[in-house]
Amino acid sequence: MGLKFNPRQNMTTKENKKGAVSALFLAVALFAAGCTGYFYYGIGGTGIFTMVVAVICAVFCVKKIFQVSFLSIDDDGFLVQKGGKNAKFYFKDIEEIGVRMVDAKRKIDVLNVRFKRGKLDRDAADGLIQPIGDDDAVIYDKYELSKHEVFKILKQKFEAINNAKKMK
Image (cartoon, rainbow, N blue to C red; front, top):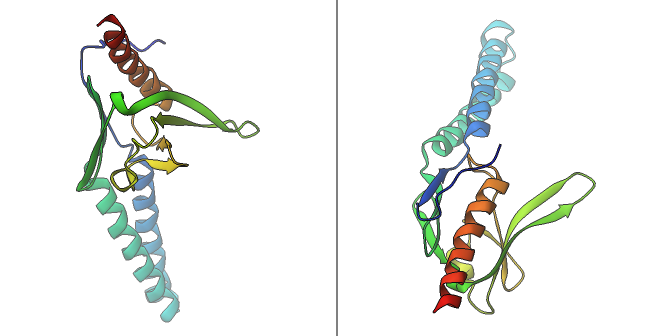
């Protein structure tokens, strides 16, 4: 199934929150187990500790679920937002976009962006994309679209910008 995408159209994909929802369900189950242990089996401190841990876990899960996080790809670059922090990375500052194999045995690959020398703002990137080395960064793979679909869209926009520069 090929991805149909108009290169002139902006694209936004939200962060995948399925893991946080699953963890919230497990936190509720852990809280119920703690209540059962405390009230039914009379195991006191262990039941209270279990309920406290479950509540802390649930708070972080709810925070993650309601946090505004997305990746938006525009004509001139891409914007990454996570909570109250965001940064835009421009295609003019990027040298190459690709999918890089990290572990062939476990089939783990990442979406890698190589910036031109000195163009990666590590402070802006911190917590949004993972800087590796001086000029490389990895876009986290936790969006509703797969990393390969995001890569295709980024590559189309990046090549459109580069082709436009060559035409001038």
